[in-house]
Image 1 (tube, rainbow, N blue to C red):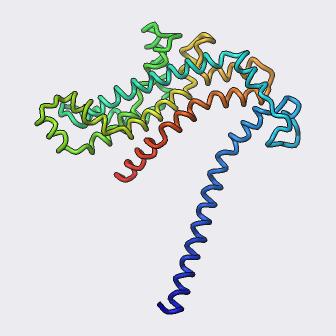
Image 2 (image 1 turned 45 degrees about the vertical axis):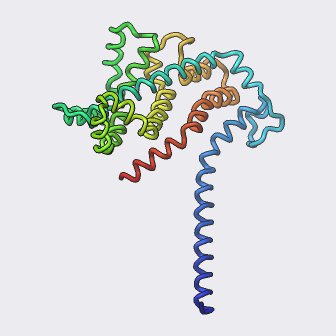
Length: 286
């Protein structure tokens, strides 16, 4: 190889390396910006009262303290609110996975009249704002005697179209040859659904579970309407109640908010591989 060709190759490698380093630096810089609010939240939750309203912001407290965490855990019902939220979000997620997978399987793998119309109605329901349904839902739940009960909170949250729409895409792409081979082996329709298709759809089901769990965990308006006693509140409602019942203290609110966000963080860490895999599969399909 000539000297000129070697120099050109070396220059190209250096340019590529500089662009790669610049790209990674920009990406990590943008990612770091998303961590700033969380870092400030942790900093405030560890500051003593004397440093809370200082005109000069300090990221690292001079005397870190856990007094706000101790106060939140001992003087509020945050543990009860966490259990209530975990119960509601967990049951909602399980029901959504069961119902939405059955509906998506029926719409894509079974042949019955009107299924395309039903799917169109489900997709069209995306355009209806959730707040429009508040009054009819409350009337229905009240007539069923479910006011101030967890069932009254859970049942309306399980009727979202997002899960059906997401799973329909995956059920539709399931190979017909596998289903035909299973039927030749004597599999019933329900066995094909439960033993063949569901185990091969762990990634989309996990992604749907994560979306549903987070959405249900953060629900505020509907639980506020249905739940009527302080002991049955969920975390978003409880945090607002905690704020209004105390003198404004950022450390208290930040400690409570950090405790409230920890379960979601743990759930995301456990399921992030499945979530990324589902997004990659969906992106590959276009």
